[in-house]
Length: 234
Image 1 (cartoon, rainbow, N blue to C red):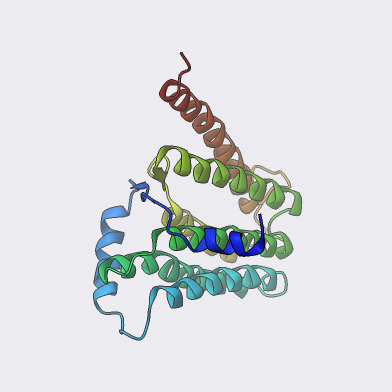
Image 2: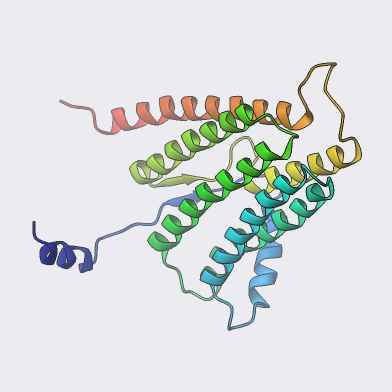
């Protein structure tokens, strides 16, 4: 196929059906009310792309703040500020697009989640450099996150169902837990758990990695069964 044919194929509209979003978390109702309130008051000059960029920068600077916390524990508190910035940009961009009826479901889904993967990589990179989390544990958590993300994205394509939360936990709850952990470590920087060499971040990361891996495996088995039954061969 020539370059001209490829460009012509890419320019042709493709039938697309947006996946059903499933989000049932502890703060979903309150969060939706807050986001709708913010969307109604967002200046016209600010659009969803601006908010997506803001969320990406928030995550990048949260990671840099963790890296800085190796030299000043105030970096832990600063990371909470940038996690809040990330929440604002990452959560409000889609709400604003729906409020203004300016949705771009394929573009939004693709850009948001590629940026999320880069953002979490930057965040965990900063935590690995902070001295509060062992680098190998940070890598394990990143691998588990990317495995679960891959399963979610493939299931969204195959089943038309985008699961944004598990066991009533979603990205917002994880940000809240992370900020609570930051405050605890800020107050007790040398605390280790049960007399071991593991810090609070180490234990939280290991628990999170195990949970994400288990969810990814369980979801894979469940979705494979659904797809097998849906496309059973005669």
